[in-house]
Length: 147
Image (cartoon, rainbow, N blue to C red; front, side, top):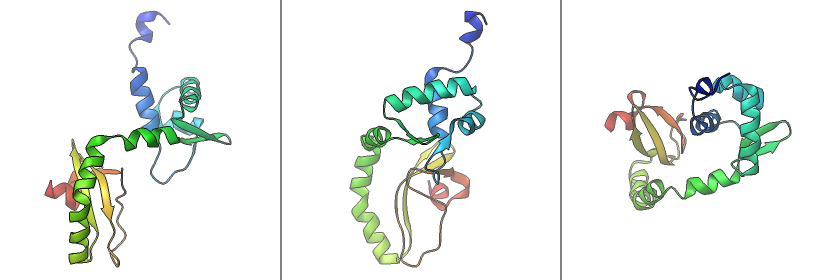
């Protein structure tokens, strides 16, 4: 492969982003083969990137599988937009939940999707597919329609 062909693929940042996004909300750990399948990145590249991400603490090994690491959580907590918005809104969300007894969501619009920043579940509310940090299509959610 010539250098020009090597530079036509996605950047390292895009590949790392794809790897991190490949983890589903309900998963604790995933195998390298599955990450390669989900992202379309060659297995050798996934293995190399995973090894470096483990060294940096962004991923953690669990047997032959990897999961999101503590360092990634630390960095996420520093995301000031989410944190300050959440801190300001939390008392109002709690009041709304107390007044209605229903589940209350705080979300931001990101393109055609909503990203959930905080969720206060109602006592007897139905199960909802939303989760903090999760994304759903805006057209398919009440909060997305409101935004």
